Structure formats: C-alpha cells, structure tokens
Length: 252
Image 1 (tube, rainbow, N blue to C red):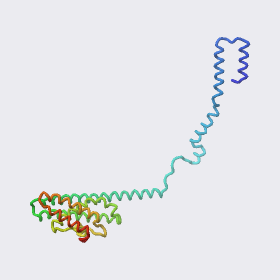
Image 2 (cartoon, rainbow, N blue to C red; image 1 turned 180 degrees about the horizontal axis):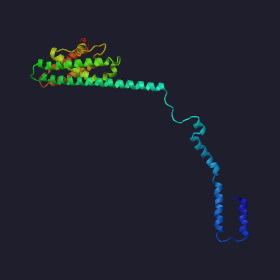
Image 3 (tube, one colour; image 1 turned 60 degrees about the horizontal axis):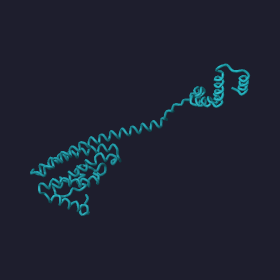
Image 4 (cartoon, helix red, strand yellow; image 1 turned 135 degrees about the horizontal axis):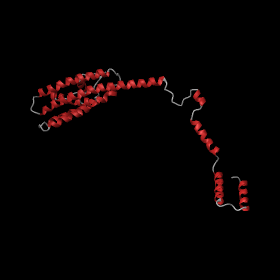
C-alpha cells in the first residue's frame, strides 16, 4: 500500500467513526504493506533461478546442431592398446597355471622320496632306501625338463616366474645333498646337483641361492640321526660346510 493511500485512510478514519472490525482490517493491511517492502520482488528472485535452470538444459540450437553431453567414445588406438594388455595378461596367467601344475607334481615326487629316505635311520639296507629315492629323482628330472620347455615360450623371463618353483627346488636340492652324503660321505657341488636334475645354465639352470639354501635345509635330516646314536654324521657335515664356505672346497 502506497503512502498516499495510507494517509487517505487515516483521514477518513478521523472524520467518521469506522464500523466494527475496521481497525483489525486496517492493521492487517498495514502489516501486509510493510512485509511487502521487506521481501524482494518476484521478478528479481526468479531471474537468477531461470538463468540457472536454462544453463543446465541444452538449448534448442545446440540440440539441433547434434551436440550431446554424453562422453565421447575412446579412440581406436587406445582400444587396441588395452586389448593388447588384456591378451598379454591372459597369456601370462595361462603360462603361470601350467608352471604351477608341473611344480605341484615336483613337490609330490619330492615328498615321496623324502619319505623313503626316512628309512635310513632304521635297520634297512641302504641300497633299498636309495633305490626308492633315486626312482623319484628321475621323475623330478623329467618334470624339470617340462618346466624348461615351458619357459622357452617366454625367453628372458626366468626370474619373473622363478618364485613359483623356488621353495620346491630348495627342498629337492636338500634331498639330493643328503642322498649324496649317504653314498659318498662328501658334499654335493652345485654343478653336480644341476646335472642330477638335468638342468642347463644357459636356458634353465639351478639358481645359486636355491643351492645354498638347500645345503642349509639338509641339516634337518641329521636331526633324526641322534636317536640312532649317529652323532658324528652332523659333525662331519658341518666340517665340510665350513671348508666349503672358507673356499677350501671348490664350488663346482
């Protein structure tokens, strides 16, 4: 309500007494007028809202020109690269599965040979004990040849898959060292262990760390010698290892 209209109403109110209820209506009208001054205009409030809504909706001109907010497809070069990576990962996974299948057979044959060697601490002829173990060594030798053939498919990646047969190879070396000790009383050298397994240093050889770890594991077999009163076997083996580490014995 404008100021002029408010003054006219006041003058009419003073000249003639108002009817009942007019004072309440007048107060309500005045309160509405003051409230309308505090609130912003509707047009000023809706204008930014219209602009915001119009910015989120594509215009008709943009829609007519074929513009779309959806992401564009990746270029063919990137698709080809990801496809190549996927193929390489699938081939590596397949190759690793084949290696693990052969290594599982190596572990099984090694356990059979180790179980046969446990009879050496019993009153059983040594030839019979070694005969059963040597039969499993031949099986293990054939399995390592299968591993060598598999690794020929990925030349130069020996240490990429070496962890798949490391622990099994160390256990096999410990078994071979113990068998050689029982036969000759000497220490099995690296080249001799590699020859027994049919390995070649050029393509698929016996890692030096696996050989040395196998020497340490071989001491576990001497634990069973104490109950049979064979106390000098571990002592003599320790002497050979000390001589080997001090370069008194040749590595090969």
